[in-house]
Length: 456
Ligand code: GLU
Image 1: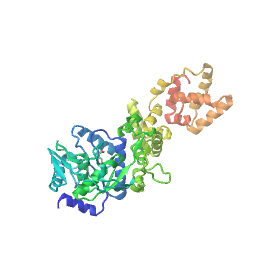
Image 2: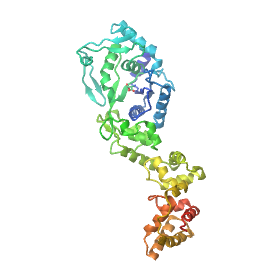
Image 3: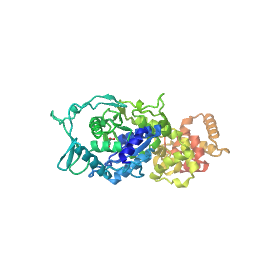
């Protein structure tokens, strides 16, 4: 069997085969990650196959390093593929630069059949007028168009389609048709900026005598100012989000909601839940707005749901980056500190910043000097802290009860005393319940910190 026949056989079985086809000319950006993710969702929802194809015909701009970054970006997002340049498959090769013979072969056939012609080293496809190239897009609905739309700029003449350029490389519109057919792609899911390329591709499918796949174009992603998302809007590469401390689960969840909804106002879900709920026909064509507040909200929700040890694994690199002696503590204790932090910090990076005082006293000293504590308050504070430190049973409840009793007996405000304790232990204005923090730090460490500030 020829590879074309194999492809046709597979297609008859109606297996869903989708592909993500990045050009390795840059990192994996939000737009690319979004496209890859929707392909992955559809493949996983249907039990089909997700294919990674590298479109590296722009030899000057494509690099192996970018190919690597795109793959590791996809891995980080949890988008695993079933066939691709790194893992092979029955429809390879999966890099366009390794498929040049195929492009030449089919272009040669079109020349032999009189549908295409040579112009020097190049091969062009002859566009004839009056051909209906309309199609039903799964997302955008019916798109009516004819070959009369394929004109030279500012002219009435139809513009022939370049298949092979004079340097021997195929054009995007041609190679994509050859590959999508030979790889038995059932659904072409890609950004809406490719809607305008689709009629040309349909023309080529017909000329080659091949069935046209289903097209599903994804809505454009806009910044909050309703302009197309770009560098101006801040982070755009998937890795920038990782480095800011967003969890892959959250970025996945957030991207999935750009143009799709899980229904019933359901905003937080896992990859598996999204895959089972996903429907291509429910993707909206309305441009989706990239809202950083929403990403923060989603990330915070995922952080809350994490197993404490997994949360620790997320936060640890940011403590280390800040030079904190993480190794001085055992993992269960650190994970316990982060459990106290629950709901604080929108990203793992923020969570690490807001909890640094658990790991070390140094950042507290750098933030807080106790200079502002009025001298007339100090004797009272010493007495207050002395009572707390001498409590036999050191639990948050006991500390709180003793503190309340002490301030009531002395006719003073809890706030002044508890706040000084908070500053001395954390160097921060906000923290989890300060008696819980004190108990987690332990009586000795609390005494050490209070002594440093001469508050005991
Ligand atoms: N290499 C093309 C791109 O990155 C692929 C477009 C397609 O999916 O057809 O835009």
